[in-house]
Length: 176
Image 1: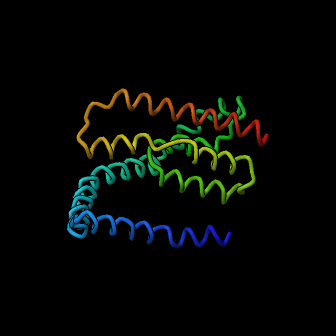
Image 2: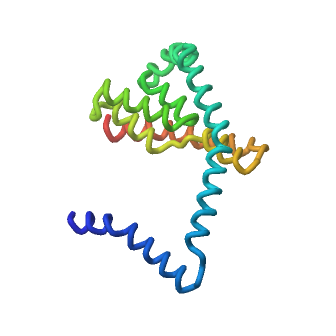
């Protein structure tokens, strides 16, 4: 354990020293390139801001309007029929939209039901096995100007659905 702590402490400074040493050997203006990269990063962050605000507002409207709860209530009998806890559905629906909102929901589920409960394990596994497809498409495709994303959207959402169903099946098999 001490070796891992020692390596993790010195890994990044060593890497930076190696990069700077190579830059000096190759006579590359490392500091000027670093500043230029920082400027590009700030420009990229500002260009992503409208997409992030739009996504956050959409999620807040979905949750505060009660639309999410109404949807969950309408499918609860079907979920009980197949043995899926209704508490997990908001997480399954929000996870493709926002990782931060899904993390908040996972935290609430674990705080309410406990980390070793079936719902806690299901939420944790779902959090780790799915991705934020709509967030990725909105932010990254928007940043590079890709407007035709229909196949990426279909494949991404299908992958999320498969991951959610697989999570439920595997957690039921492993943890009962």
